[in-house]
Length: 329
Image (cartoon, helix red, strand yellow):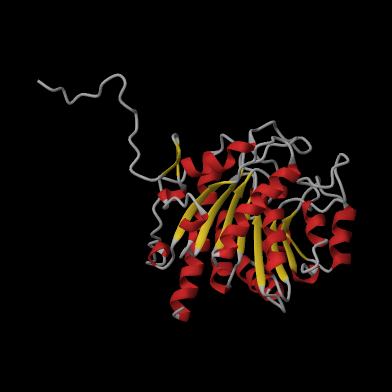
């Protein structure tokens, strides 16, 4: 008689979703694009940007390489339907997971930027929106804005969310790092800093020169205190107006320490914005048009932040889907 009980060598879990690696599903169980050919017809494409460099000041030695993998693993508890809008963005959008950039040399940021840029180019060439999930902003956000800069005719509008300025000239002698990537972004020819909005800066790990640098460059700087006083809906309207003024590309990057420490354990800054504020901004940006989106490092073991990151992505998709439905295109 055949037994229907599980045998000792049977797999613990039999995935019914596409698998990127033997132990890792695609983000949200999306279709896997194994080649550039598979990208054709996609509206959005996920690109993983694993990178492991030296940790920033007072940060832990967490494995940033695993951020794209862990977010994917923690995403499959979710679907994509949002009852609050009676909307499933995947009814309107074709979204695929294009896997991870081949970052073969650990700690080599220039190799990482080149590898991630190559994947982003593939996505942009088929007319899709890259969604980059990465280890640090210098390995995910910087290559994305560089590729949008290369495609832009009139200019790139930039939205960055971070508790910190990330605009130092260099840090520890390194010009390409998480503490300086926005300074490198400002050097791109199609990035006019008057079309840059930086949201959520706060606290004593920043210093006066960083704020003065932003003001001198023409960046619109909204501290978390100002966001709370004015409300995110008002801030979102001004942000979108600023970044879309005489630009043809819009880019958004999130460092999750922009959130209050109460909803971002494992990060280190209190008095940040709320998750609701973050999702409100993502929805409005999606509704008004975006050409590239990226997120940076999240502590390896922090499942709640991974889940918030997934909600961020779904709300951005919802905004894009609403834009499509409203325009009929």
